[in-house]
Image 1 (cartoon, rainbow, N blue to C red):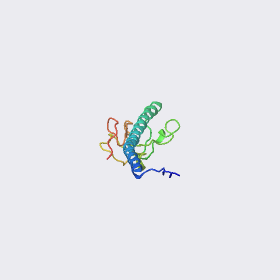
Image 2 (spheres, rainbow, N blue to C red; image 1 turned 90 degrees about the vertical axis):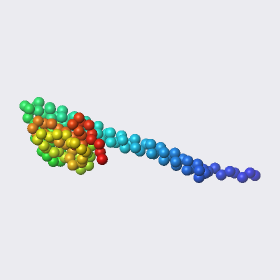
Image 3 (cartoon, rainbow, N blue to C red; image 1 turned 120 degrees about the vertical axis):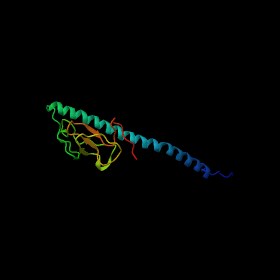
Image 4 (cartoon, rainbow, N blue to C red; image 1 turned 135 degrees about the horizontal axis):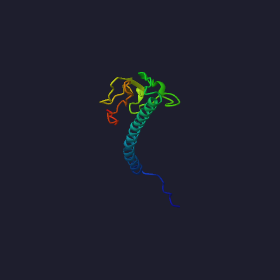
Length: 144
């Protein structure tokens, strides 16, 4: 009777498979991180455009009056209502605990550098709104 050969993988075969999986992971993980970052920037840009449209609609419906926006954590006044936003918008680019925080600043200007101190900048004089972490052209500022 002949001996039955063992049907098992050798150590070299297993190491080759592990190396191939490591190379694939090294390719896929950075691409995934880039996609998540792009998604946060696009989501924030979309929320910014919606805020600007809703402020315009509010002004049109209320004889050029601006909504009563209060500095703080998502205090958009009349903009958080069934007619506008059901919940305060979030700045996903800033993220974290300050993603909903609004800074009310007369003669407001966009940020010059990325930070996570607040999510939105509102000018009560003219209704201009800017997303924190975005430049004057509504492009995301690089994260550190």
